[in-house]
Length: 186
Image 1 (cartoon, rainbow, N blue to C red):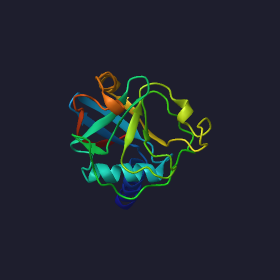
Image 2: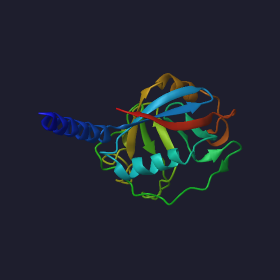
Image 3: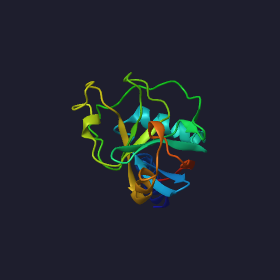
């Protein structure tokens, strides 16, 4: 009887571990204007989430700024330190914009150049629905890869979107990303 109980306990424990591994990662973005939480979707954008979490684990984002803020569009960060000093990044990743996710308000996506497979560390949070960035509606027929969503603290993102900006949509006063850390899985 003890062996049966022990065997069932082990099976339940292993099943619980497998379930825990299937949960979506959650990160907290702590900024100079407050914090917000993002849920990431590795089932929809595995390479992108792995890349982003690699930067998170390396503490790459600590001390970077939201360097592009357009109040009717999005807030973008993750590539520059104060004074617009660009940080050196890892290799670019493959664009996974064909994952069925949409650039809706609160969604998080990778920034890139005109080259579809050029995303590295920079990400943006949509502050309104921007489906013209989705693969199906984008001019280049590639689009931008959504890999997560703000699940708590969107009011902080809205505060960031309302900062005063100057040339090239750069905030007049730095909005610093103090840190991005994994906190839990959902």
